[in-house]
Image 1 (cartoon, one colour):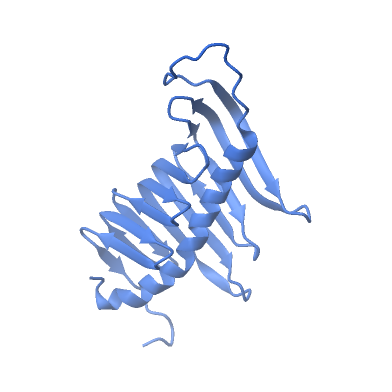
Image 2 (tube, helix red, strand yellow):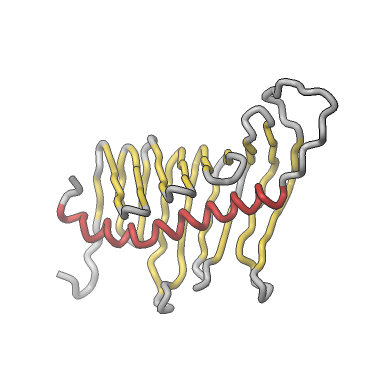
Length: 206
């Protein structure tokens, strides 16, 4: 069970995790849907191999809303598509997106791997996802940051998981655990293993 002193801070964290989930996945899904070229028609069927059938270098993909404001951007050093697994691997990905209230979500890693429709995105190596900005009422919110060597995001079930040590920060509050399992639909977040946390008292809060 989550220690009682951590319950309130966990509730605060869970409010903003859905924003991080959707920000990362919107970028991955859009890029795959819009930027993947159609496979050439083969004259004879051949078993696919784990060799890239196309690649991109130094690319940048942006999306805009009807008013012309940028909604998201994906940059990468390289991207390779593998036909045998129908996955796309991105080197040095940098993703950012803005929600309707102007809140910014950033995601970086050494490498990203996405399935064909963007419903699963895996971030490998120094994965960092941050969210900062205002809430729906325009009130500034503390910066929320998730760090791990691996983050696995599931779009359809709205889940975020990692089996690696993870650190969550919101403002001055810090939580650490050996793994993370977050279910947005059921609003359940579990930090497992050696869990520890530091909660900074708020002025005027007992």
